[in-house]
Amino acid sequence: MQNKSRQQIAILDFGSQYTHLISRRLRDFSVLARIYPPDVKIDILQGENLIGLILSGGPKSVYDKTAIKYTNAIFDLKVPILGLCYGHQLIGQHFGGKVKSGKISEYGFAKLKIKNLKLNKNLKLKIKNYNASLFNKLPYNMRVWMSHGDSVVKAPAGFDILASTNDCAIAAMGDLSRNIYGLQFHPEVHHTKDKDRILHNFAVKICKARQDWKIDDLLTEIIKDIKKQAKNKKVFMLVSGGVDSSVAFALLEKSLGKKNVIGLHIDSGLMRKNESAQVIQDLAKTGFDDLNVVDASEIFLTRLHGISDPEQKRKIIGETYLDVAEEWFKKNVETIHESSILGQGTIYPDTIETGGTKHADIIKTHHNRIDRIQKMIKQGKVIEPLKNFYKDEVRAIGRKLNLSRHLLNRHPFPGPGLGIRVLCSESKINALKLPKLKLKKTALNCQILPIKSVGVQGDSRTYAYPLAVWGINNWNKLEKISTDLTNKYRNINRVIKVCWIRSEGMPKFQCKPNTYLTKERLNLLREINDIVEQEIRKAKIYDKIWQFPVILVPLTLNGGESIILRPVESREAMTANFYKMSKSVLTKITYQIAKFTKIDAVFYDVTNKPPATIEWE
Image (cartoon, one colour):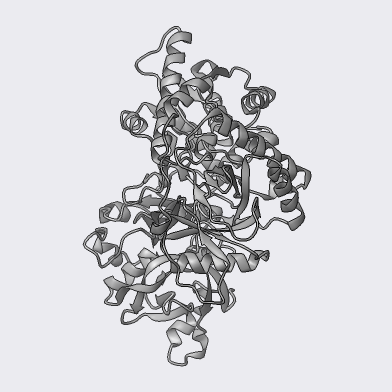
C-alpha cells in the first residue's frame, strides 16, 4: 500500500514500451517505485521520501524539435539518477555531451564490455565507490539488450565511459562522484543477462533502499481500489476465458460479491477448437459457475467480411464485443442502471502497445483499447483491476485466489483470437516494389516475402516485410542472422526459416489477392492449431513455451496458403525470444501440417521481440 513515509524511487516516463518493467523489477526487490510524467512538478517529487530517480527510454530523439519536455530541476534533487536508452541520451545532452543518430541501429543482443575502473590510479574517489557501482559482482563481458537508433557519441565533462559494445562506444557512462549514470541498453528486460543485478545495485547499493515493500500489499491495494471505484455499482464483466479475464472476474467477485458481478462469455467464432466449452468447464470447476454464454459468431464474421487492414479488424472486433454485450444485457438483465460499469481483463502490455502512456507510440490497437472504450474510461465507466500488471503477475494473483493451475498456465490468447492470426490481403503486392538487400555473394539463400507484419523497433511501430531463409538449421546461427539483418535493414522486421514447401528448388512466393476472413479459413487454422498444441503437449514442452501463435498467411505457390509457427519464450511479453524447438518435434509438427492440401509451405519465425512483436498483426 502507498505510504509517504516509505522510501520510493521515481521513474520518469518518456514513452518507452518498457517503462512499467522498470517499476516491476524494483517491486521484485521489494522496493516501491512510482511512475511520473517527465514534466512532473518538482515539489511533488520533493514531497515524497525520494531516494532515487530513473529516466526511461522513449521513441523520440533528444536533439529533435519533438523532444519531450522535462523538469530541469530533477537534476538538482541530489539523489542518485539512472538514465536508460533515451534517458541515457538525455543525461548526455543535458550535461553538455553530444548525441547523434548512429550509422547502425542496435535492436537485439549486443556484447557489453565493462571497463575496469580499478586500473585507473587517478580515480581514487571512484575506486572507493566501485563496490557500490552499477556493475558490482558482474562479469566484464556480458550480453545485453539494445533497442536504439541514436547514441551518445561524446560523454559530458565529469563522466567516465563505463562500458561499450562493438557498435556503441558509450554504452554506459557515469559521474560516480554525483551518482549519475546512463545506460544505452535496457537492464529492465530479461534479455540483458545480468540477473537484474544492475537495477538491484542501483536501488539497493547506490540508493540504499531498505526493501520494505511486500507483494501482500499489492493484493490488498487492488481489492481496496476495486471497492473504491465500484462503490455500489453493478459490474458487467466480459470473460474471454483467458488468464487475464478469468483472474479479473475472480478478483471482482471476491471484492464485490457474486450478486454485484455479472459475467458474460461471447463466442466470437474466432476462438480455438472447442474453446468456449473448455472455458465454461474450467471456470465451473474453480467455483465460478455463474458465467453466461452467447454465440455471436455470425455477427462477427459478417462485420469482418471484406476487411484486410489489421488495425481495422481489431477495432471492428472490439466494437462488436461491446455491441453484443450491450444487447445481451438489455435482454437478460432486468435493470441496467446508468451507474453500471464494464469490467475488462486488460493488462499492462495492452495499454502500452496502444500508446497507453502520454509519450508512447501506438504499436497496435488492442481490441479492449478502441476509441469507444477510451471514452468510457474517461467517463469512469470501466473497471480494469489488472491494467497495471503483467501476465506472470496476473498468474501470481490468480494463485492467491486459488484458481486452477490448468486455467492459469494456459498459453496467452489474444482477445481478437484467430481474427488476427488469419492474415488477409486486399490486393497483390507488386514484387518490383519489394526492398532489395545488398548482401554479399557468399550470403544467404533467402527471399523477401510479399506480406507485411507489425514490429517494434526503438519504441516505435514498424510495418515491414519478413525475410525467408533456406538451408540453415542451427538456431543460434539463425538468431544471429535475424538480429544482424533486422538491425541493418529497417524495412525487414522478421526473419523466418523455411521448414517445408510444396515445390522443388527455390520458389517465388506470391501474395494471394482478395483473401479475407471466412469460416473455411478459420476452420483450417483451428484444426492446424489444435494439432500443434497436441504435439507440444505430447513432447512435454507446452509449459516451456510462453505463447505459440500459429498464423495462416495468404502466401501461395500452387493456389494454397502458408503457415507460420511462432513459439516464444518470455516472462511478461514486453520482450520475447523465439523458442528453439528440437528438430524431432518440429519435424513431426511440419509433417502433420503438410498433410493439409490447402497448405503450400510451413515457416518458423526466428525473430526476437523486439524488433518483431509476438503476434503478426
